[in-house]
Image (tube, rainbow, N blue to C red; front, side, top):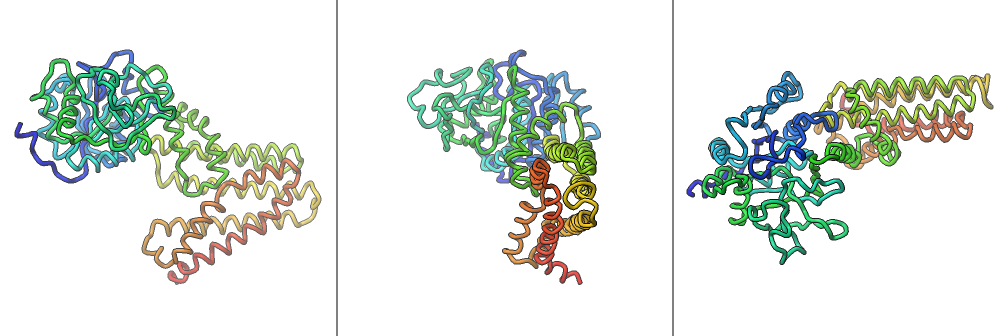
Length: 494
């Protein structure tokens, strides 16, 4: 037992053990074949195995040990020559390192420095959860994540349930799913309750264990008992179990008939809670609510983010063409297509984040494609106002269109300068806190796609010529305002 008392290092957890053929809390030799999906099951445009690897990497894990079964060759092929992979991957075949064998964990414990994260390949989770587990696990405690049962939760999942506030007095067998004698009840620091007071909190299929506990099952060996459960039981006896809430850092079990579908919905929904750098109100409350269905379609089609960006641009250019005749019917079709283009434009970033495919090129392509569409829309509306409407056959619509196009080009250059300032803290010091706040406000609430709704409304009531006038004048107010806020940066460069 001397090894159990060994002190842990204080650095953040850096190693994760990924189980591809069994759940973390599986009983005996593994899960039931009916409940356990393959690590090659696709969820959100990636296999469960890929998603686990890249989420761990995004969360700061640099070493991943994979305990793989017969699917190992296929899993290796998934990572081979993948430029996204930066973490070091070590392959451990389960025929030599069976997860239910205590000797496996005794062997791995000798190689773990400090704590180690153990993750099943059957849970979709956030990178922020990985980060939280890494730092909480650096204190030498066992750390588990506790969440509430959700709709569609598969009751046969071999998870464990812990006691929280309000459940005192209930017996172990009444609150545990399987093997009630294996894991004693644990108190949580932050109770998690379901909205209606029913249901029990479940432990997610990932946790952090100190290296000293990984091999403890050899001492506490019980036939047919999951070694990781024994390790967690020992931590509970010592009083060194810490829980974190799954409400702040979400996770979703994929097991069960509807598991993959529900997990994908959770993934897409988690993106909609994030505010994009240049998302306006319409983007957050309208466009991104509509983009979820298209995002899932693009994931199923395995389209790349850049392909989606080009698709959005093409739809936007077609929309601009419908404005040229100047008739109300064509203008309304153009406005609807423009709105569709904007919704599709939300999908490229969502797909990029879901598939860990973000790139500097993709970000720049998105910005330039947006502005090409905006310029085409202004030009198309100007041509339509010149051919039909109260200002037809005068030079005014063409002049206003040219003014709006020129202002859009200058605005693009200024917005790029402001974006670059974000990545250069030294240059940001040239601006006052109030100036920085105003620039952020303008980028988030003015330099965005919200005007697509104004175009749609104006097209519907036959007032696009007034929108053109507003764009021709208002765009220059934006240019002058942003130029004034950036003046210190321009002066410093002279």
